[in-house]
Amino acid sequence: MTDSQADKILDKGQRPKGEGNTTRASGQPIASENTSVTVGQQGPVVLDDLQLISKLAHFNRERVPERNPHAKGHGAFGELHITEDVSGYTKAKLFQPGTVTPMMGRFSTVAGEKGSPDTWRDVHGFALRFFTEDGNYDIVGNNTPVFFIRDAIKFPDFIHSQKRMGQNGLRDADIQWDFWTRNPETTHQVAYLMTDRGTPKTTRHQDGFGSHTFQWVNAEGDAFWVKYHFKTRQGWDTFTDAEAEEMAGKNADYHREDLFNAIEDGDFPVWDVKVQIMPVAEAEDYRFNPFDLTKVWSQKDYPLIPVGYFVLNRNPRNFFAQIEQVALDPGNIVPGVGLSPDRMLQARAFAYADAQRHRIGPNYHQLPVNQPVNQVNTYEHEGPMQYFFNDPEDPVYSPNRHAKGGGYLDGDVNVREETHLADDVYQGAKTHGQDLVRAPYVKHSEDDDYVQAQNLYNDVLNDEEREHMAANIAGAMEGVSAETEERVYAYWGKVSEKLEKRVRELFAK
Image 1 (cartoon, rainbow, N blue to C red):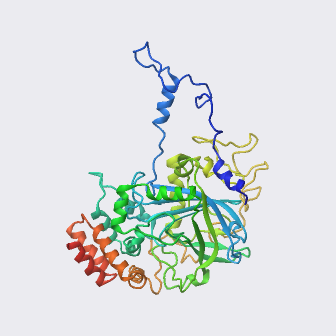
Image 2: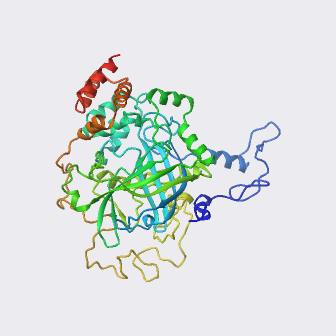
Image 3: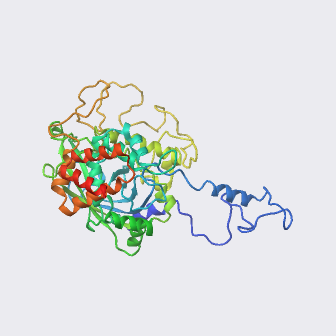
């Protein structure tokens, strides 16, 4: 890929450099940007001042609704380089050896609003878009390999518990801990959050994860389950709780500024792309349910396989147009990649696109940063802010008598005589029955809501990190009710009696 190909992503939608006198948005010359039309020298301004009215009306509408979670974010552009051969696992073109694909990344906090500090203790979004010849491919993950919940029906409740109270507009530790302690599946993620990993020093000094289980399918039709890992070459670096709070007061945009300045200075951050691969046949009896987003796959069982790396080497030309309006969507998948029985992933494939329709309208795909690099051929048309329109001779329905066809399984006549696997979504997964039910995940041999948090605390963290974790928990409990306080102790007691005891000691101080 040449520099010009990568720059085309950033150039989309940019007007020529401004010079000379200004015009209205519809092209007419403007007499003044600085002085309103009045009735006499000191009389009232008039509604006939078209530029005054246009300027104020547009100003009132400059902001779009902020994202509900992940409102505070920043990002950059670059390229994905594939250095290894993983074609035995996936036919996806962007993952073939030697391929270079233009991309962008958006990095965010989850709970805070657009103006909140980057360094508040939080999970951090780690979302990537690859502009492939088969359309946009989005991996919308976090800087942790797991999440708080495993079923998206709880997601609004979870986010509400992390946001602000209805009465006073304040965030509240009691509702956070009340939700967490009444949902034991949160333990593993909260354990991550309460280590120093919950306060990464910069965007550049953290790993990223696809978090969910996805599917890869190779050219022969063989399917594999896959998890993505993005390993920072800059090395991990974190703030302590005190350092993070101090930086929040000094510079609320510390992560945003750090990434922008590093790229401006030519210090381009790089992440190695690695995957864990699980054959479909092994998923059924794996010791943890492999589709449960609150669990990881042991790297002893499924080691990391190198794929390549990505580098971020271009800053956005315009933050609002290219970062705020980017519409990332886990449902943006390409041939060779599929979803999985992960209920959170399946629900997000609807919810994210729906959120973008709300935020920036049904034609959000037509914004420059959301346009794919390949040709779009769709029956979608009309709606607010339509920019592209179909050829006048193109039909608006399918099937039809024209050259514009349907999907690759469709014929000229709408008669379905064969059953086809929905391999554009995923294939080869056991359904455990075809009845519509509301059922928990099928528990595997070692499944438990606390076991992986126990492993994290006992086997991964060192003594200093365990002490930081206990102190971070105690600090995050400030404001909890007496009832919730006891629930928090019991919650962590299931992870470690030593941890429960230490949290009790620190919170009592």
